[in-house]
Length: 150
Ligand code: DQA
Image (cartoon, rainbow, N blue to C red; front, side, top):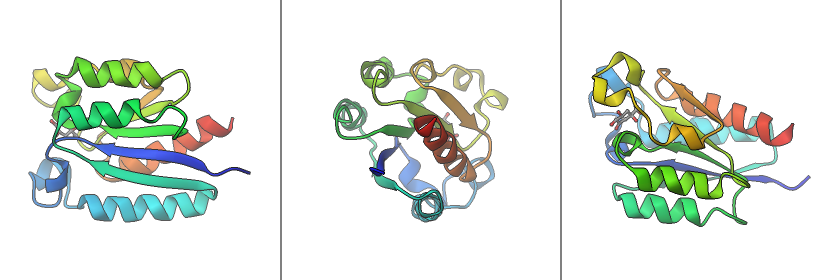
């Protein structure tokens, strides 16, 4: 069985996890989330992960566009760009015919300020997981792999 290649993309300010508003986002760092995801991928078997974090909208758009033919799926937390970036939303839709994406948020954005209630990017994704802090990424990986293997 060919390994599934999954790109894990994190947007602006998620490099600051651990110290960034821990009451909202939890105390896990992006590195510890990556370790948990890697352990989950090993348990699932046949799953390869690549991790990218960028504070730049254009980097994220470029990386999403480059997944066609190179990756089988995307896990993405677009962070603040969730609510503002038509470019990220369009990029997800542009590859969605062959590269399904799952959107993750550490916090329950619906329980926060109104500006965070709307996700532009979620419409192009197969699903969205939010409110479970870092564990949401593991849930997203399990869901995405199940989707890809069914
Ligand atoms: C976030 C929610 C966004 O509203 C916020 O701008 C973030 C993180 C989350 O994971 O809960 O940076 O995407």
